[in-house]
Image: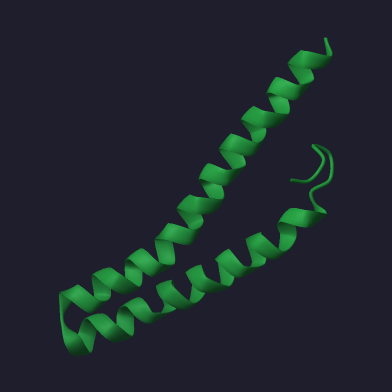
Length: 73
């Protein structure tokens, strides 16, 4: 894992997750109109799950950084 103040190691993870999310969310209107609701739900899940993953990762990373700051005191 990277040092607490070094965010450069997290940039590829963020870029890949955002590309997957954009492609998944961009596919929602096209799959929903032609094939029904189930493929639309799957495309929506593919678009939303990477965003939720990044949000969870940010929260847990912030928690880890705050605990390291408290240890320094």
